[in-house]
Image 1 (tube, helix red, strand yellow):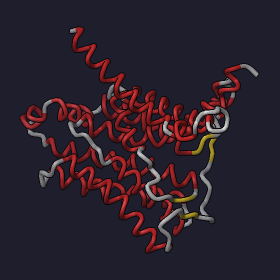
Image 2 (cartoon, one colour; image 1 turned 60 degrees about the vertical axis):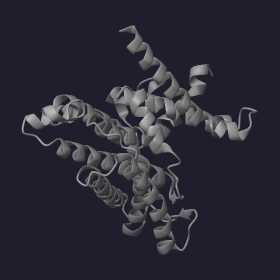
Image 3 (cartoon, helix red, strand yellow; image 1 turned 90 degrees about the vertical axis):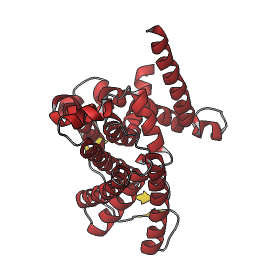
Length: 302
């Protein structure tokens, strides 16, 4: 077995792991382009994670579980956006408040529903279907990387394509980008910049609901604060990806690979476990530093 073949399982796992980063960052990209830094991604993901698995458990349907989980997550994003945009609250304070509220509320509600503040296992939860794409399956090596993933992986790729088309090929996308560049110019056209910013926040609620559903439905369990900083990493992904859908896709894979490698290294490399578990976050810090240096270099070169 050559080096490439031996790395296929590692890369295959990276594609799975990158999915929550990709979905959350794609929604955060819309808010970023509209001129708002959405630091509530973490809390929105946690809401999606909790309510998707709970509704899937009670309804016995993954579809309705995800649909209702997304609905509740979008409702939370609507509250966050309305308080920020219409009540003029500081976006950083409301974002942090959203994260703290989601962290506490999910634990309290979990205890009320299941009498447990720790790990909640859902025994009879339907399994996520895994798809194979015949066209990809025929490709040597590459086919092994992109087949037999759960449905959320392929859905995340469709979200990337849809985001690209909306951002660059529709009037709505043009107005969202225009709001971020010059809100006064958008207002002079008789348009309401806050409407586009609120729409962007709702889109982030939709994608974060999906991102959270990936975590719990794939695991079949809910763990308090199981997002574990993924919402914050999604923010880094947006900037590392140069605020473009394709860039976000590539950056998400980098972080997915970092986490996949840390999981692989725990049983293969004689390195302290704490350092291995911290590896994805070290990559996050390094990425921020390199991105800052690159931006500074570009400014100096002009």
